Image 1 (cartoon, rainbow, N blue to C red):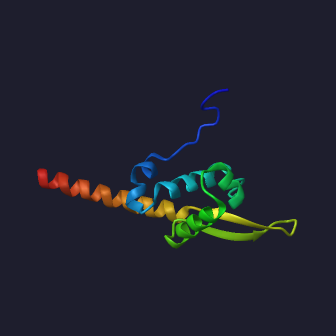
Image 2: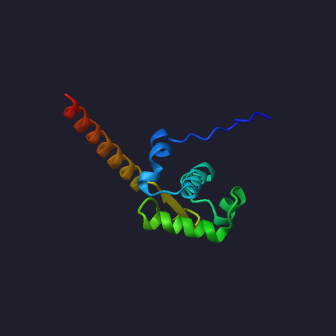
Image 3: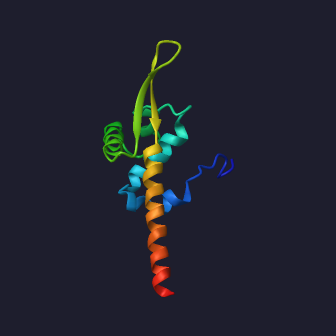
Length: 117
């Protein structure tokens, strides 16, 4: 068995700046587990997430609600070709918030460098 048989890729900027986005460590792991366990952006069940973590389904539900209220996660319900409803997750708002934070950080660095010159 290889230790890193299926590595999970964590975006460096997210890993570095998640506290500045008001994301807790547990919320970050839930985000990563959603991405890892998803199938075509279909939200994994709370049960599946809880089985993969050391927290229960109720805590998963609360964390997902927190992510939604922080506008980091959007969930859309779509009907497929078999008349089944699927929950599709979208982290584009998280990406936008991270992008804005990075631009703000770059601006601060530029201002600091200009003051030094």
